[in-house]
Length: 117
Image (cartoon, rainbow, N blue to C red):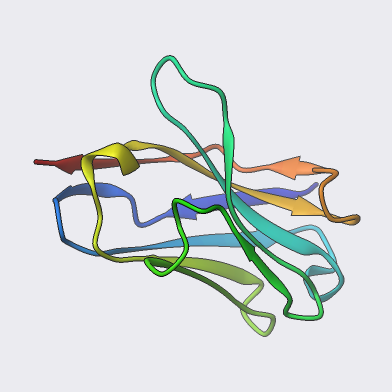
């Protein structure tokens, strides 16, 4: 059974930082691409960042220069380091696992990030 468990969300002031973690189990972590997505109230879920098994990254324009995605294959964990947070970053953040980039096979349950002004 595949599980993706996010953690690290919370309430932070604008300009602050958070690091999200997503621990995976039930998959061969080193061969999958991992991604972070987010969904704000009343909006569609959107891409934040992806990281392939070959360590190629892709970021949404809104994340470039502020967020960093990384992975630790020994811990089956993907991270999202977020800095210079803005109220517009407020959303539920989901991690995803993909055997083929762009085709999501598994979702986590999400973690809430709230940025106060």
